[in-house]
Length: 362
Image (cartoon, rainbow, N blue to C red; front, side, top):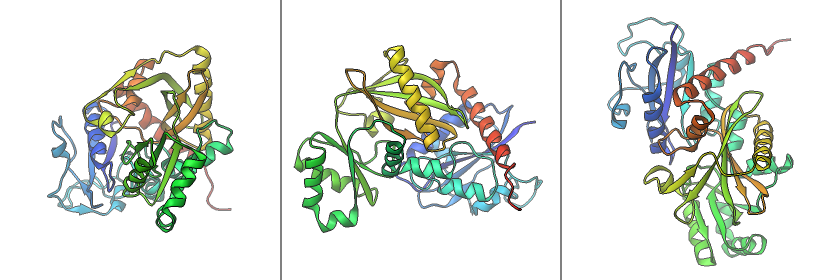
């Protein structure tokens, strides 16, 4: 019995094109003998467009953007989502599993997850709480602090407060963090809108840049450290991959290095000691449980020269592009890309089945 899999991709987000690349990679890896694949494209304006079931290879991202098709209401995912456009076909209850291949706001932040919960549909990845807390770097870091995880110093600002007193904001950064520091939109990923600052002039430009993408920004202390990442799979229990290290050729691992020119070196497995690896996996599992994560997570760390680890963040929907770390980590752990997707679908079904045990009456 094949699994009827709905793929959500695109999205009303600055990471729309990253999502398109992720969708292409997943579609190419899926076994058509095991899955009935139904692409559902979300435009940059937020319209949902269901394409025809895939029956063969897709060679171009543009084939996935059904801009000429009629948009659908998301609620049909749980109803007659497999009917043809003319209404013919069998109404057999919709999809077995939804795979949200969405990055950033309006997809990775709990919004789509909440909709899928209301529709009572199994879906791959993290739930509402983990997605929303993991998307907001300020909330995430506050939870990590409560869990006793070591982090670099940070502070944060709301756009309206900054606009009222810009000089006070810059002074706060200089007093509490100093230079260098990193300015980031609080609710965005893929290194969009991130700047490294070594002076007040750069700090001012960085605030302007980051506030274009979010109403809240976070500023983090810059430290000299290695960037080490670990992949996690699981629901209630976290299974960790080997560690990988990112060695940027530029000043830091920005959007272009991640998705366009591959201008970075990925070392897998990372050259760290067993003691360092064990400490990182322990911290990764703690972060996973603190946010109540499920399905998949990539945990990112800083590791100083003297071996002190700091958790940077977790990514609740790491990309599956050719330059992505998450699938490479699991490949080196012994889980090839197609099998990784199958495991994620299986985890989604298991979590959904477990949720059905919850009583809603008394």
